[in-house]
Image 1 (cartoon, rainbow, N blue to C red):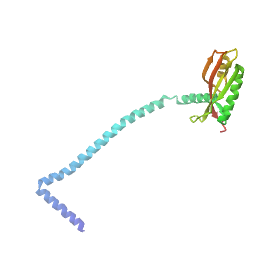
Image 2: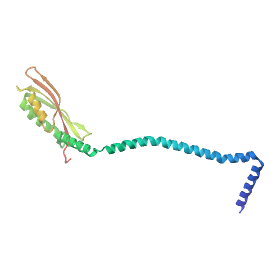
Image 3: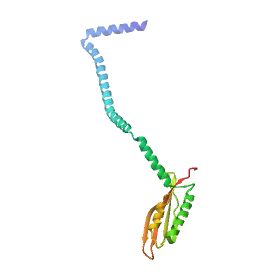
Image 4: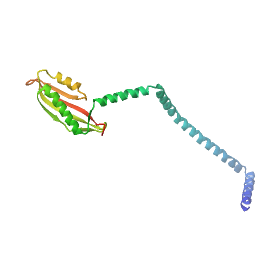
Length: 193
């Protein structure tokens, strides 16, 4: 009971002092007013920041809604899946880079034997393509063309499936028509890998 009595005495003394001193009374009245003004200013700043953050979020939400409403997503996905399937159908398949190089060498030997009187072929080491999980195998072919010229050989290379890419072609008319050609193939691992 001592604490409430001390509190009652302190309140009574404060009341007596404020009645005796009008300046103290005015100062005590300003403390709650200053607190109210401070809290009001803090709230105003918080509301301003929220409004500033809201504008870009509303614009972004509107763009996302417009994209979602535009539709056509399933058709676009289907088109891209068809493109991917066509691209994968044009790629070579092998269990390793060495097997892919051997396949390319066999294929090129049969093609160039029909179109070149003499030839020399050099395979480059396979280059790993981490982006697709496969390899690129390159070959350089030098030789002398038969009488029909370069077009039949290029047509056979272009029609070959899986795709053989002719990266560089140089045809010289010296000593008959000699050819220097660089080709490459994209190799994906076999499905069982």
